[in-house]
Image 1 (tube, helix red, strand yellow):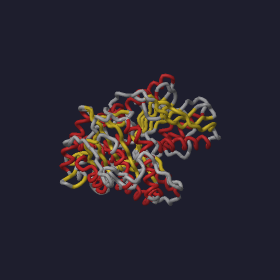
Image 2: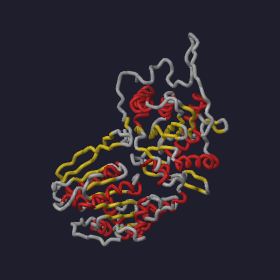
Image 3: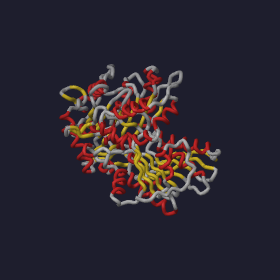
Image 4: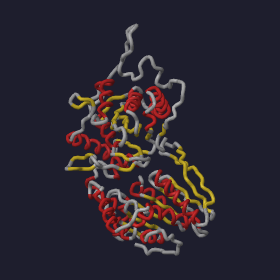
Length: 533
């Protein structure tokens, strides 16, 4: 490992010893493996701000894997600059134009802080192409969770040519991650980076809990500190998770069912992932307002995607349902010979069941649905029953009950089929960090691949998830392995009778689904997708 280049810096006194050590290291490539929530990103924000503000500094480029951490980094950097003689010249939004694999151009907003020195701190998207033709100090935060990290670092390394530097920071995400591979290669002497390790107990020894007490107004005592540390560890149901999150010991990939390398091998950046989150006020609106709002959202967000689908190809739908804590996810696979291409993934948070049903029926009426499978347990029972009544044999049932009641034998039979598609590269999935992390939550337990009941991850767009996207894809795979019946559907309505066909969600008295009703009054609730929308 390289010798640290410890050029003098005006390190703030608020830093603890391990933070000072990290900030002082100005080696060409610095790698920091760390515990969660010990203030390393805070240290990096201040360190980068002071560096960009100095006359002999450089531009700074920050890459985080989600919006919240990027926002926090830029806020902390801005605070640091204001504290040090008001050295913020301008805060503004910029634009990064990313060329996708299909040739389309995606415009991504960037956050920027212009320092009085003339140097700029920029938050960039975590795509390798964003590293091309930039020069300065590059910080990759929570690197183990960034998709395609190997390609990202490869593109970033060229900045060293003209004196640029790279700082790679992360807690662990399994022992098969490229971040862990970098650390192991340094330990074997194959690389010459400067590597630091900051586990949770080291941070506590150097004043972490005391600093928390100071910031929150609590009274410090050694007994309270010991109790707090114990609670931090016992809060994890699995000691291996605590070891990975707190002690910087990566969890063995032997129980991770889908290795990261095979997941990333089938990702594509142009597959749409549509997200919708609603607040509690939406549920208080009357039925017609809720239907109109969701109808308009479907027309705006789903219809353009569904209209582009090849009508002669079969669609297989999988869905996992939730109401409050987890996500509802709808996954559409389109089959072309032996290739199963993901054409759309929808994530819903805090959406009433009737509006989830409305979205499902909207999709079913507009695609060549060959077969669907939905999780019929718990929250999914009502929606599974509704789909089964409306579409009968097009949705999988378990012993004549609506939906899939996944058992150990279900996982043992169909999870290997899912994995086989990844290994054969006969499937495509979105290049989306939350979906990738959901698939990595599938673990081997007593030889059976499934998602542990209490395992949850933070979602990059807010809230938590329980691998719901992985279950939705699993359901789509189950659907694709069922016998498909070919239909020719002709609707004949006797003169004078009412249309009572349960396949049509909107009854005959209501206007077409693509034309929202107009009524007096306005809807004042919040209708917002996550940051993708």
